[in-house]
Amino acid sequence: MPVTVKTFASFGEAASALSSDRGARYLGGGTLVMRALNEGDISISTVVRVTDGALSRIDVASSRITLGAGVTFAKILAERDLAFLHAPARSIGGPAVRNMGTVGGNLFAPSPYGDFTVALLALDATVSVQGGLGARDMAIEEFLQSRERQSGALVLAVSCARPASADAFRYRKIARIKPKGGSVITIAAHLPVSGGRISGARIALASMAATQIRARAAERALEGRALDDAAISAAAAAATEGVSPADNALGSAWYRREIVGVHLRRLLSGLE
Amino acid sequence: MTKTPLQFRHNGRDVAVFVDGGVNLLVALRELIGDMTPKFGCGQGGCGACSVLIDGELHLSCLTLAETVNGRSIETLDGLKDGPNLHPLQRAFMEQFAAQCGYCTPGMLMAAKALLDRNPSPTRAEVIEAISGNICRCTGYEPIINAVLAAATSGRARA
Ligand SMILES: Cc1cc2nc3c(=O)[nH]c(=O)nc-3n(C[C@H](O)[C@H](O)[C@H](O)COP(=O)(O)OP(=O)(O)OC[C@H]3O[C@@H](n4cnc5c(N)ncnc54)[C@H](O)[C@@H]3O)c2cc1C
Ligand code: FES
Ligand code: FES
Image (cartoon, rainbow over all chains, first blue to last red):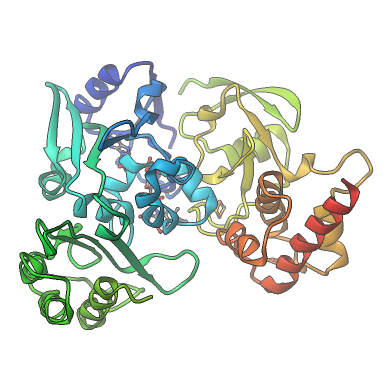
């Protein structure tokens, strides 16, 4: 069934159009929206687009980086100053998907997708959202927990602090098909070190619950400690606390629980 | 339902069509322009048979809303040859037996072209990465990888 395509020059108009129409869906790169349309998803009656270049801006000038929601993974890979985000960007799809898919769309991508969002969750990102009533910033964790209710809002940008060192941020996607493939598990860890001890540990997981989640027990096991064998073992043992993975074609819930600690240990130990 | 006018460059030639809302670029190319070289494999982004270049970048035409290419430049396999002369990639695919049924070939060739335009001397790993979004169900990937590497070598020899 044909849909109505509404193209707006400003994101404010697009946000109003989205919030006032239940059947409206925002089109980012379209990799998931167009798939739904091709499959005849009748819940979409209107597609909303924005031509405003502001949504595809990258700001890397300060210690805090900001990525417009429309920034593609290929654009991130072309930006040397965003090297810490290259591993998550590179882990998504094939080259065409990386040329099309956006950071904003990834925030809404259901499992086994949403890999980039795992990195953003470990980096304590902030999501700027424009609703019918105006703009506001939300912590990414809060955003993800209320994702179902965000469907009428437009994401403008995400921002996060740059990790203090290359070693402080780590990312690992476990997939069956390489170099691309859906996530069996995705793990990102941000481990800032102060005086030889981890301070403000963040570990984020995908494919281990309905949305991306923090592995809080594993974070607690690392907090205030040096990243030594004992701390790594404690974190790996705690990795399954609070998870509720699903069975899907890529792996069973049982398998995911079995391997999450193994891969967290490898990530924290710096093993390939 | 009103139709929307759409203009873009198609293999160097300006074209104008009217599209229904929500129509994807693959349908616009095949059914409205009559360019049957991009193939429909899955309509889900999974196979790469519909790959085209949009402003020089590899995209999946089945997942591209047709209206978003207004004013842009599209390249498909149909525009790869230069008059009667095959593109080095097409020649290499023939010489290296890199096609059997040929269904994936247009998408493979466009993915390979996107790579060679950017990087005329790719490594084997870079070729594998470049075609990683394209599925071939019958030839097997080795002859395809070899053909892309051979085309890169022949391109350098000519330059
Ligand atoms: C073959 C294939 C392989 C893939 N592989 C991976 C993978 O390995 N890892 C992975 O994480 N993903 C993968 N994906 C999924 C997808 O491409 C990415 O998650 C991508 O980031 C989605 O972004 P998009 O802009 O294309 O989303 P769209 O399809 O445009 O949108 C997806 C959803 O997000 C909403 N949305 C998009 N932008 C905004 C915004 N600014 N504000 C509010 N709502 C918005 C849309 O309305 C829609 O509901 C794959 C997809 C395909 C087809
Ligand atoms: S038809 Fe477009 S990717 Fe399969
Ligand atoms: S040659 Fe048949 S699918 Fe590749």
